[in-house]
Image 1 (cartoon, helix red, strand yellow):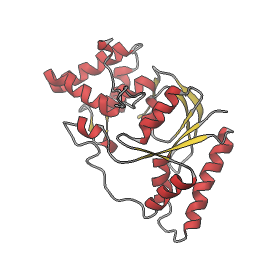
Image 2 (cartoon, rainbow, N blue to C red; image 1 turned 180 degrees about the horizontal axis):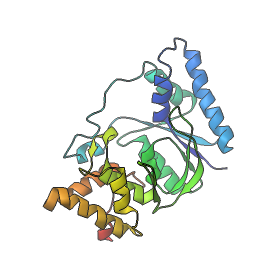
Image 3 (spheres, rainbow, N blue to C red; image 1 turned 90 degrees about the vertical axis):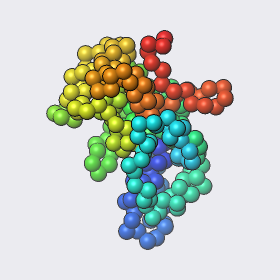
Image 4 (cartoon, rainbow, N blue to C red; image 1 turned 180 degrees about the vertical axis):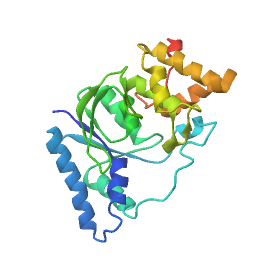
Length: 253
């Protein structure tokens, strides 16, 4: 029976912000349990690990150009602590220290190829493995599907969707305003798609992306690209000392 790697951080905020007008804790409990019940029914398994982000994040030391997540508001839902405690006590959620819950989920589906990454976070779509995203008020459900390592990019009108390594490089050009990662000026969804769509190998992705960085940063291009890739890359494994293995340029192989 396959195991679900569940993004507990998403639950903290989605259920939390959606329960601001709720006064009774049992209603919050019910919403959490309804989520798990629906997920188990949809994916036909009750084996799961729920991950939560704890203290510290190695990316904070890697971010030189701009403070990592420095633009985020520190405000949390009023039920934040309650939901976090509930997930840990009732659902044995694992609190991940020194990195993000996303990284733990990425490592989980990397070592267990039958596991399913359950999240609506677009960043995790760069990781090879099984993925499932549930329906939200502004996103359609993405059914269970396999994401391969190289991945793909798709353009729907002016929107850009991606998976695998192609999505990682696309994000390095676009930047990620949620995490305060700044991309390349002038590179929106359409230009990024046109820049990378014909690439067939990671070397080609790297070359096309590096050229864009050189256009803005000149001699600092490789350093700035490395910084952004380290911040964006979801960790797949740890060293023997327990440190995250960072992104590796294909030029190093």
